[in-house]
Length: 165
Image (cartoon, helix red, strand yellow):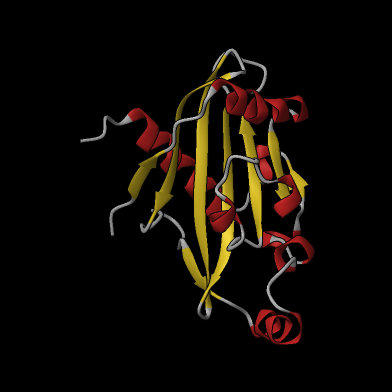
Protein backbone atom coordinates (compact mmCIF):
# COMPACT_ATOMS: atom_id res chain seq x y z
CA UNK A 1 0.00 0.00 0.00
CA UNK A 2 1.44 3.43 -0.85
CA UNK A 3 2.09 6.00 1.83
CA UNK A 4 -0.26 8.98 1.90
CA UNK A 5 1.52 12.24 2.59
CA UNK A 6 -0.47 14.87 4.47
CA UNK A 7 1.38 18.21 4.33
CA UNK A 8 1.22 20.15 7.58
CA UNK A 9 2.17 23.83 7.50
CA UNK A 10 3.84 25.24 10.59
CA UNK A 11 3.74 28.94 11.41
CA UNK A 12 6.95 30.63 12.67
CA UNK A 13 6.05 30.10 16.35
CA UNK A 14 5.40 26.39 15.76
CA UNK A 15 8.66 26.08 13.82
CA UNK A 16 10.57 27.58 16.74
CA UNK A 17 8.81 25.21 19.17
CA UNK A 18 9.76 22.23 17.04
CA UNK A 19 13.34 23.47 16.62
CA UNK A 20 13.74 23.85 20.39
CA UNK A 21 14.37 20.10 20.75
CA UNK A 22 17.52 20.35 18.59
CA UNK A 23 19.54 21.11 21.74
CA UNK A 24 19.17 17.39 22.55
CA UNK A 25 21.40 16.58 19.55
CA UNK A 26 21.16 13.66 17.15
CA UNK A 27 19.57 10.46 18.36
CA UNK A 28 16.21 9.21 19.54
CA UNK A 29 14.07 9.52 22.65
CA UNK A 30 10.74 7.87 23.46
CA UNK A 31 8.37 10.60 24.68
CA UNK A 32 4.87 10.69 26.12
CA UNK A 33 1.95 13.02 25.42
CA UNK A 34 3.34 15.76 27.69
CA UNK A 35 6.28 16.07 25.27
CA UNK A 36 4.31 16.04 22.02
CA UNK A 37 4.48 19.28 20.00
CA UNK A 38 1.63 21.58 21.08
CA UNK A 39 0.51 22.12 17.48
CA UNK A 40 -0.51 18.48 16.98
CA UNK A 41 -4.34 18.62 17.04
CA UNK A 42 -5.60 17.55 20.46
CA UNK A 43 -8.09 15.06 19.04
CA UNK A 44 -5.25 13.32 17.19
CA UNK A 45 -2.70 13.51 20.02
CA UNK A 46 -5.24 11.90 22.37
CA UNK A 47 -5.07 8.72 20.28
CA UNK A 48 -1.30 8.31 20.69
CA UNK A 49 0.34 6.41 23.52
CA UNK A 50 3.85 7.69 22.86
CA UNK A 51 6.26 8.63 20.09
CA UNK A 52 9.87 8.02 19.23
CA UNK A 53 11.37 11.47 18.62
CA UNK A 54 14.23 11.26 16.14
CA UNK A 55 16.67 14.09 15.47
CA UNK A 56 19.21 13.99 12.66
CA UNK A 57 21.53 16.72 11.42
CA UNK A 58 21.17 18.88 14.53
CA UNK A 59 24.62 20.41 14.05
CA UNK A 60 23.93 21.41 10.44
CA UNK A 61 21.75 23.90 8.60
CA UNK A 62 19.01 21.44 7.58
CA UNK A 63 18.12 19.22 10.53
CA UNK A 64 15.23 16.76 10.43
CA UNK A 65 12.94 16.03 13.36
CA UNK A 66 10.52 13.11 13.22
CA UNK A 67 7.98 11.97 15.79
CA UNK A 68 6.95 8.37 15.11
CA UNK A 69 3.65 8.36 17.02
CA UNK A 70 2.19 5.03 18.16
CA UNK A 71 -1.44 4.16 18.82
CA UNK A 72 -3.48 1.05 19.42
CA UNK A 73 -5.59 0.08 16.41
CA UNK A 74 -7.71 -2.89 17.41
CA UNK A 75 -5.24 -5.65 18.24
CA UNK A 76 -2.30 -3.92 16.56
CA UNK A 77 0.14 -1.08 17.12
CA UNK A 78 -0.07 1.51 14.36
CA UNK A 79 2.67 4.06 13.61
CA UNK A 80 1.95 7.62 12.46
CA UNK A 81 5.13 9.52 11.61
CA UNK A 82 5.18 13.30 11.61
CA UNK A 83 8.36 14.86 10.31
CA UNK A 84 9.76 18.26 9.55
CA UNK A 85 12.84 19.56 7.76
CA UNK A 86 14.14 22.83 9.15
CA UNK A 87 16.40 25.54 7.77
CA UNK A 88 18.90 27.10 10.16
CA UNK A 89 17.26 25.10 12.95
CA UNK A 90 14.14 27.21 13.17
CA UNK A 91 12.06 27.47 9.97
CA UNK A 92 10.12 24.37 8.96
CA UNK A 93 10.29 24.08 5.18
CA UNK A 94 8.61 20.69 4.81
CA UNK A 95 6.35 19.08 7.40
CA UNK A 96 3.94 16.21 6.94
CA UNK A 97 2.24 13.17 8.38
CA UNK A 98 2.68 9.82 6.63
CA UNK A 99 -0.36 7.59 6.80
CA UNK A 100 -1.67 4.26 5.57
CA UNK A 101 1.38 2.70 4.01
CA UNK A 102 4.03 0.08 4.43
CA UNK A 103 7.69 0.47 5.23
CA UNK A 104 10.10 -1.41 2.97
CA UNK A 105 11.89 -3.45 5.66
CA UNK A 106 9.45 -3.63 8.58
CA UNK A 107 5.72 -3.43 9.14
CA UNK A 108 4.13 -0.11 10.03
CA UNK A 109 1.36 -1.98 11.85
CA UNK A 110 2.27 -4.90 14.08
CA UNK A 111 0.22 -7.22 16.30
CA UNK A 112 0.34 -6.41 19.99
CA UNK A 113 1.90 -8.87 22.42
CA UNK A 114 -0.13 -10.81 25.00
CA UNK A 115 1.58 -8.71 27.71
CA UNK A 116 0.39 -5.52 26.02
CA UNK A 117 -3.15 -6.88 25.69
CA UNK A 118 -3.14 -7.68 29.43
CA UNK A 119 -1.86 -4.17 30.21
CA UNK A 120 -4.65 -2.60 28.13
CA UNK A 121 -7.26 -4.76 29.82
CA UNK A 122 -5.96 -3.80 33.26
CA UNK A 123 -5.35 -0.09 32.82
CA UNK A 124 -6.00 1.27 29.34
CA UNK A 125 -3.34 2.16 26.79
CA UNK A 126 -1.78 5.20 28.43
CA UNK A 127 1.94 4.88 28.90
CA UNK A 128 2.52 1.32 27.73
CA UNK A 129 5.29 2.21 25.27
CA UNK A 130 6.95 4.53 27.77
CA UNK A 131 7.35 1.53 30.07
CA UNK A 132 7.97 -1.01 27.27
CA UNK A 133 9.78 0.79 24.43
CA UNK A 134 10.51 -0.82 21.08
CA UNK A 135 13.72 -2.84 21.32
CA UNK A 136 13.81 -2.10 25.07
CA UNK A 137 15.44 1.34 24.78
CA UNK A 138 14.01 4.71 25.75
CA UNK A 139 16.82 6.65 24.07
CA UNK A 140 19.98 6.19 22.08
CA UNK A 141 22.07 7.16 19.12
CA UNK A 142 20.83 7.05 15.54
CA UNK A 143 22.84 3.83 15.10
CA UNK A 144 20.70 2.24 17.85
CA UNK A 145 17.36 3.33 16.37
CA UNK A 146 14.87 0.43 16.14
CA UNK A 147 14.27 -0.83 12.58
CA UNK A 148 10.66 0.35 12.28
CA UNK A 149 11.69 3.87 13.34
CA UNK A 150 14.53 3.82 10.79
CA UNK A 151 12.03 2.90 8.08
CA UNK A 152 9.57 5.62 9.17
CA UNK A 153 12.38 8.20 9.13
CA UNK A 154 13.59 7.10 5.70
CA UNK A 155 10.03 7.16 4.31
CA UNK A 156 9.61 10.73 5.56
CA UNK A 157 12.89 11.81 3.92
CA UNK A 158 11.88 10.12 0.68
CA UNK A 159 8.44 11.75 0.69
CA UNK A 160 9.84 15.18 1.62
CA UNK A 161 12.22 15.08 -1.32
CA UNK A 162 9.62 13.81 -3.80
CA UNK A 163 7.32 16.39 -5.40
CA UNK A 164 3.67 15.71 -4.47
CA UNK A 165 1.04 15.58 -7.20
